[in-house]
Image 1 (cartoon, rainbow, N blue to C red):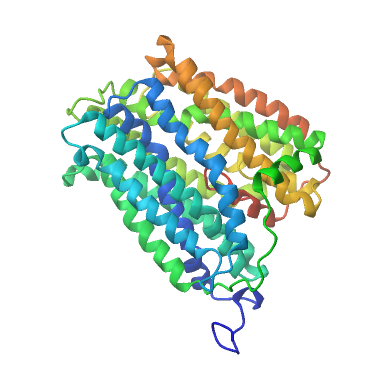
Image 2: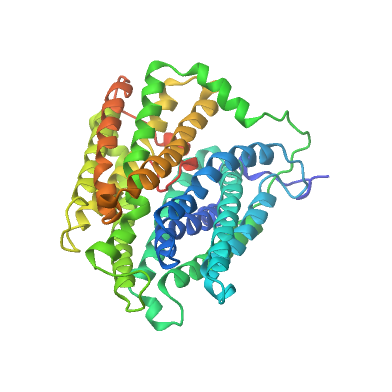
Length: 458
């Protein structure tokens, strides 16, 4: 007996389904982005307000990188082999979101939950970070896979575009809260308000996605593959060009990591000359300005994600990669100089462009030159290199260089020096992007959805 009746036709076997239905199915990706966007932007300011030193801040930020390496491969394999009548994916989405809600509430109200103990507040904050990271990484892969599972093949590109739109929408809403200083009209500070709104919208979006998604249960349990073994076996299939692409992606991530982790703190501490431990509001004004610029960056990402295919078709993958790295170099370079607060709009615009290019073209190239039976393993390796870059950046840059007085006094210098890695990424990309012809199909954007940061369409 079929769970939806004898005459039920699975969505994926239909010619097409309603666009509105696809929008609702993919709503879980809006939930996921309402985890990554605020956590990425606000973790450093939270650490500053809790009085954490550079080493402690680095260890907190390292949580996301380590969890991002360990959890997603297992969540993906387990959700692929689950035989529940409820379906394969939704149970992981629900459990993951529960952990996220608990974790983000602990982060948002860490001081209120431990008002008499500063060390207790820090412990609550760290545990909340761990729960949110584990929950988000447990739900993200299965949620995105469910979108592809349910939607007919003819509408898979539409799925990618909707997920890209959700990534941009979450960034717009999260950063708009800070940009408009809406916290002034509440009893909460900026970071707490952003996390509260993110939790509410994320929860509602996930409920919609779970309710409208009629998954088809597995009738036979497939063979379980050890994800770590899959990664290890895939390394022997790396060609020279694939090795260059992986190296280019790793150095790109190194080149933008310091920007991602430090730009809000830099704006509040250096440009606005605020003190995170003070209640005068100057530091918060700097963070709000950074969120305003992030809002502009997000809009640029959304717009350029729709132009990216045309750019690649016009100038080719290699030249598009070079253009992207040049944009990233300009972004990092400006942080070497203490400029007017509006001058940094150039950095945020160029960062928006390089994020789209760097999170799409490597996957397109890998798809072009890799046999289909090896593709999943090679893509996993690319993602693995990106996550490893995060760990290297935390220990080598944030904790290492960040402990040097010259860098700790001005986090913009950490961002600026990272342009060296983007130059190396440019060189590796020049060597690795070797493919005849310029035209690339939109379908390659499908490969970017497992990547960290978020709009990634080609």
